[in-house]
Image 1 (cartoon, rainbow, N blue to C red):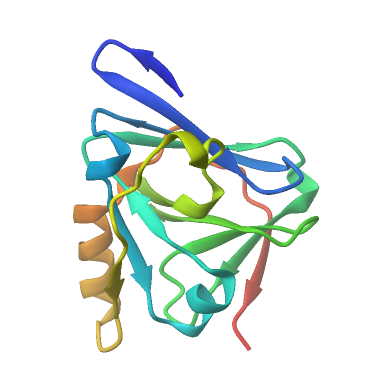
Image 2: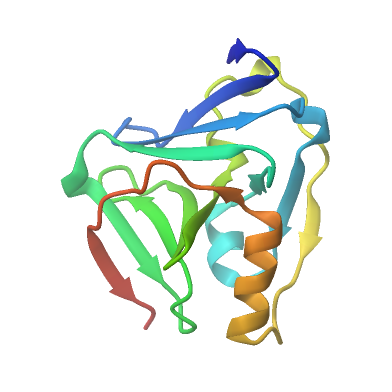
Length: 156
């Protein structure tokens, strides 16, 4: 963690280091909104999503050939996985007027020194594509800088 002015920077990423992230936030980890999505993808990957709408997330791709972007049926966001070690790192939603992101809190580098807020079970079933996009704009962190485009795999 790096602290500068009122923002602290937290780091995380996949096991092999190919896909990394930085979360800049003024919130301590105990006040992060940690969400445990109940969809099959997130349950199988053990995903715990977090973001700060007043903060910022950067996705740092050390090995671009290993970045895998997975899209579900609504095709409204790219879920970022490492093609090398298989870790689910986070997700990005790119729109013409900006981009937003979440990170998988389980991929936080220094988990032993931070106490995360308890995860809240979430279900997003029944949302329309527009409702989903509006929720993400409200709850996800702005993304900066944009991530490079790589492999996209459609849901089966």
